Image (cartoon, rainbow, N blue to C red):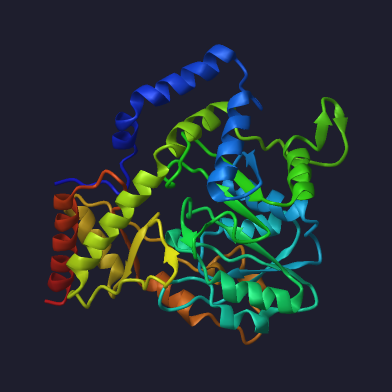
Length: 371
């Protein structure tokens, strides 16, 4: 049996007629840049997240960059980020001209450890940027408390958390602003790169709209140095169509995660992340920890199962960011997660028999490795 890590073909086939109609509408309108479908998507996604504004941009990395630039965060400023995340979290900070400051994550869920944040705050710190990793919301109450005491902004990296909830509120409405990615494999994915920023701040929304469009509100009138970073109308049309199904797809992901949990409950060689009270994860990824992870991944691939590693290196082990490590700093949990994390197939169209096969092969791979 062959089981892909993500099956975008199955998703497309399930809504093929609607997707084709949405794309045809853009082609017939010939309004490919900043078209009405983008306006519609921005309205509906902002409402979905519980935010006043959504600004579509070219990628999740641009969303992080422009969110920070829009807030005036740049050279000389510091932004606190988790040490274990995809590199784009730190790149967004760097592209804005600011400096990422690393904080270790929690052993139980790989999310930024709020209790480690105060020690990282300096007089140059401007914001805390938690990542809702794997579709699980960070401990936002504690983070907001720390930020309020220090006079800092709280910004969300929600690239993996479309629809995730924290105490009844959705990701995208849990901080001063949030950055999303619509990379094709995301819970809400485009058919190419794409991203967005959500916020309740009218001035920030206006400034990001300016910055994404060459620093221009009116053609040929450029007020400041901006980017060419607009969410394509075609992608917005695709995303609007898919947004109608997001809650149902997330529900299926949670059901699949529950099945994985049940099947792995007595498999102590695989450690499952803890789900925090008051949160509703959307399982962009289903990740466990295990020893001999690399060998298990190879064994699964040999049996036709596409498994992944998210992520094999924490930020401080990457050449791009080794220079940021402060004297005496260490991030043991980030290193541990990078050494042991194993992502099992997760997408809405998975079947029970596929999940059972994945668990069977994973547990037998571990048994064979231990002889």
